[in-house]
Length: 333
Image (cartoon, rainbow, N blue to C red; front, side):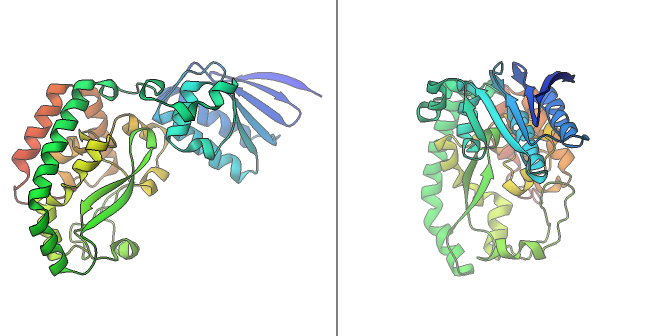
């Protein structure tokens, strides 16, 4: 048996026969996550590729969305090389994140203590990391609850005329549900009034993507119905999302909620946009909405929201959104 110890960036690596153990730092956020991904990839591209890589989380008490992105990148890379990836000495805070995002069922995990391994059964908000100040703001959450209740009342009033118009215009359900990625990449089902033909998802591959990067946009999408065009122009299609806000999956104001296939293409730094809850409105909506067709611009707007966030800023964005809702060519989310 041979043992050797090296240091790659800030990640000490211990090798023993065909196993490499990578020691992770106390915090694993965007800068560390990029180095973490590179460290694993360098191991997999070396002359002597281990059969097993163990990620030692013994010192780690905080991870954010970028860390989740790095973990997923590394899992894909190890699977391609047929290398086993094991998460070891995982404490409750990290286990809570893995459980919330469903990654506890994908990774091989050895918890630090027996009680830690059962943490997913008793995970509460206090166990999860504060990746951004808005996450723990009870005032923001209160604003979301009040706003969503008012929004759902408005939705109820408009439901019957909108439902009749949707059904008369094209066959299919009244609501459209789609899987999106929320805070830390947790998947949830977003709801809208249906604005496209019933087989829109199946036809998507036939539609030209006019956007650049990990988003999909087509200004004259033929799948949009006549009533759907009106719903999108006035943003009435988004009224059912007040239910997502009430449930806590979304916020009134936040970042644009991406689809899983968009997130699949993210590089590690781009996962930062998932450090806050997605919103019904946000920077992208008051700065061009569907006219924003470059994914890099979406990232810049989302990160600008995170930097500038305050409760007053949320209110300002809500008021700006209301003021542009019925403007010509305001576009759709």
